[in-house]
Amino acid sequence: MRYIKTDSCMNSLRHDTFDKTSLFSILTPEERQQIGAMAVEKTFEAGQTLFYEGEPCEGLYVIGSGVVKISKTSPSGREIMLAQDAAPSSVAEVPLFDDGVYPATVTTLKDTIAFLVRKEDFRRFCAQHPQVPIKVLAVVGRRLRQLVSLIESVTFGSVRQRLARTLLQAAQESGGPAKEVQLTHEELALRLGTVREVVSRNLARFQAEGMIRIVKRQIVIADPAALRSEADTEF
Picture (cartoon, rainbow, N blue to C red):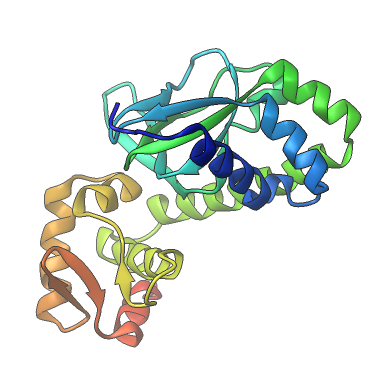
């Protein structure tokens, strides 16, 4: 692994991660420290998998640094990205409670440090802190809304319309300048359930029409109003 972390740096990261992850925001600092102490540190290089769809649930992963993608793969091998989460965040909340398998695959997009809270430890903690499952429901509700939006995007409209919507949404999610899209052509294709070549062709058309600029592989929205009009076109 490429990570070289001192114990003090790792302890600081652990403390900050559990302090800033929304799932634990309702806890006191002492309670967040308590659940953080249960967690097992794991490091992953970019492109490595935290867990695969269909595997037994080991526990909750709390992302301390890096970025991960949540995806599903069809029987034919086609992959679609359900979400992209950057630190600090949590993944794999649902199977903690239903004893099911992991419903999707989580893979790192950048070098990542994650903290695994094992299922039995998390359940014991919830029994002692009944407000935590309520917070989990809020997180699950947000993910459900994302999935409904994704289903709508994949089901309705042309690839061109869906790409316009995805670019606007990705720019909003980026956390940086509102007009920058922090996704590659491949990642856009995964979100849309299509192939990279189709995305590249449509991006080239958007650029020719003045809606976007592509500068050193970075997509920048040049005309948000025109792109929004394209996204909202009736189909």
